[in-house]
Length: 140
Image 1 (tube, rainbow, N blue to C red):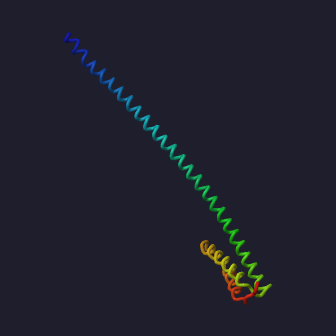
Image 2 (image 1 turned 180 degrees about the vertical axis):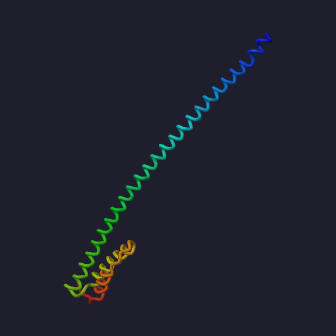
Image 3 (image 1 turned 120 degrees about the horizontal axis):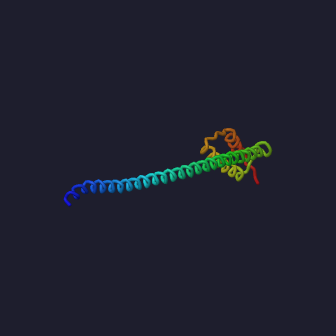
């Protein structure tokens, strides 16, 4: 019996070592699969976040373009209104009431602030408003 144990012990040890190695290989394989899945999930999440960020950037750029278009239109409308009023007071009436001057001055101030905030220079309108402010008073 001693002889069988001596003969079977190395075989059993080899089998036990192989079984342990197979068990470890299975664990390593599961860990690799889990790590690869986590990486794939992270990559998918990053792609989704990048797509969302690009979409938001595109939408904000479109909104900026709309705002700039509206701003240009508002500036044009305000400038046109001021010029129209100035020509009416300067060319047609030759005078302006205190109230008309105050209203024109307030509109010009708002227009000047809008121009300053957006780097728009319009000395032509400034000159017209100064000329209207120098007109004689008229009674309403």
